Image 1 (cartoon, rainbow, N blue to C red):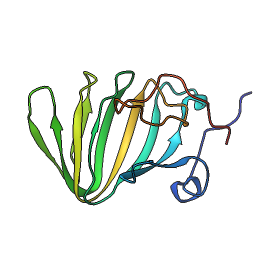
Image 2: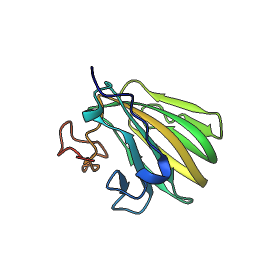
Image 3: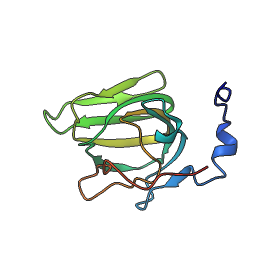
Length: 138
């Protein structure tokens, strides 16, 4: 018989190496579910700080993002389309979309990545996560 279900508390995970702070100071992210949990996706609660304005391009991952709180916008660099983000908005980067994320008020976001992140990724020069990185052990 296998072990029981996985249960984690955000406030506990925030005090561990699961919480990553961006080198550029735009965001922090607590990775609640990672590759080694064997669910086929990873799940993160990410805070984008007020005034953040930065480009990302996940060439190796698909991402869905649900806004819990805050206010901002996402701009698609393919067609220049700008979409407002507010509580209840989900945006889905289903084509490895190159985009700019802007936070007018601090945004709290729930993010799902496929394939799952191992937990040690940092954005590379293109604003993407490398496909494989060292994995977290906790």
